Length: 317
Picture 1 (cartoon, rainbow, N blue to C red):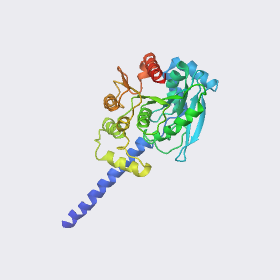
Picture 2: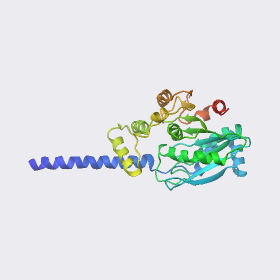
Picture 3: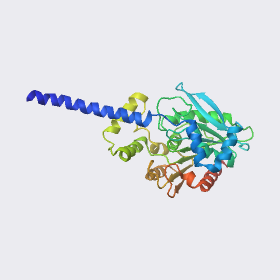
Picture 4: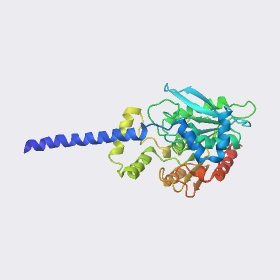
């Protein structure tokens, strides 16, 4: 009897460790190691979702106005981006940052605002492990911020105008919005970055994954999320708890426009309120009625365009 008790005391913890370890490995694979969308998929979705934009999309493709470039990052990996030159840019540039499992082409609806309507230069980077950018795992906007910080001076040099000062806005959606906010809180961002726009970004990777664990699988945060976070730390050098846009934006003193749909359940709508509260002035907030995740532009294209144009022009001028 005593031997059985001893065996159970040894075997049960081992079984629990094996189950939790397997669960953490699955969660990490499911959340940041799974495949991302192709360019063909994204181009098709753009044509379907934004029929009014088809003529412009076809024109930039056929005229080869949409060009691409690559750089070598400090970590040794190659990063890719598309770009469009504005015919009246006068040193004004937008860097548009895509979301989770998307790629640079997914931001062409934003490029339409900046390039077609506002006549600005646009850079559309593929984040780590997306599109043509190298990388084995999604970085959830955390280490991505370092890649964007490397793209910023490159964009400035690419589009420099000897007659006008350089002015750059960062505009991100979903994970791209988290990336934008994470950049905004870092020291050393060049002064020619004048403003930020975040559209439906999350407060932190921990908050987002905890919410999705409950929403998709009915699983509480503890103990699976902390174990998965530690596994991410061991494999990729970062963890879910340090990756906090909420902490980053508390250090941002430059203007930021917050956009979020009030019917967003993927990055829950409530997240925008602590983010907005944590950000020092200047700042603006626009909540779009009945919009689901990353659908504010699709639901309100004219208002979205007008909001972006007014906000950027205010701080560029």
